[in-house]
Length: 355
Image (cartoon, rainbow, N blue to C red; front, side, top):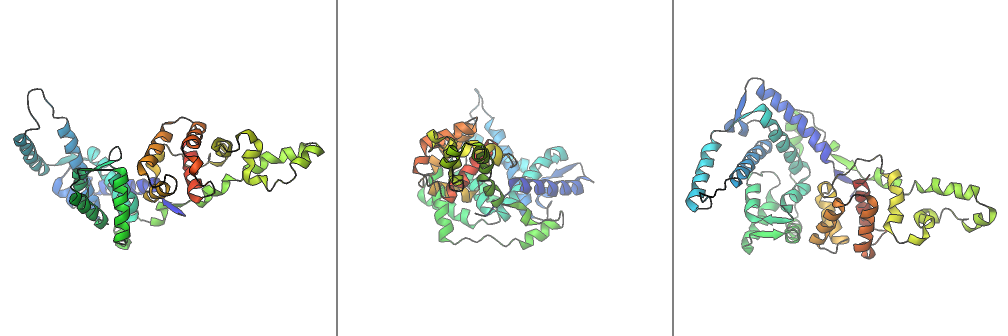
């Protein structure tokens, strides 16, 4: 996993693309209709995601329809509301102020499904509270036209089971199986690059960031800490700490031998110097790619996605790096291979969370 998607870069380009489209359309009009939304952007997936956002807004509005006097759960009332929705959909009228956030969100999501479908799949199947409701999932993918095959197959499997909802474990397991079965290959992006670029020049390489610059500094801050001890120590003490290269890999254990097996000892002292310059993660849960979710679940949490989700949620709730490291150390780390790539990648995310 040498590269990962930058959600920040996706959002920045999505906003720029949306602003350009908005400027062009609203230069001559005050409001946009539903029919105009369907043909607004040269990337049809963006238009469909705007319609999806409007449908979501309608769903949220209907949830507010509760009364002590009227039965909104009645079948006839529900049918009437559906018909009302049909009428409303033909009478969409939105000004620029209210349309802009819809278009920006739709643009970012379209970029995700085109250039990083695996992370988009993750967003869709995670659902609410790590549960995927079949009905809402069906509605979600109705507006999806790009890289849709794995999700269509997933819906088919869910319907065959007669399931109304799936746990996070079940959803990820099914998707993982499907991706292997169909040998899924994302659609070619060249045509989309050309279409986006006619509005705002697009270099998809900017959407991905290398992980290597983050990994290197982890062992570097150790050396300045050891040098004063060697230089200023008496000859007898110098003899005891004679081989600096060897402890350099485990320097935190030399500094605090009474906590040799503690993650706080290994990572806590380094975090201020190693991660201070990196982009802060406010929530680990929101920053994870689908590849990371699969990788951490399989390698660190023994294939248990719910256990993985519980750990991430707990870490995101904690206030300090020290508390997070102590939690990991006590609950999980005894079964982890601390020399593995997965372990170090996971710990980098934890450090960034509190940098």
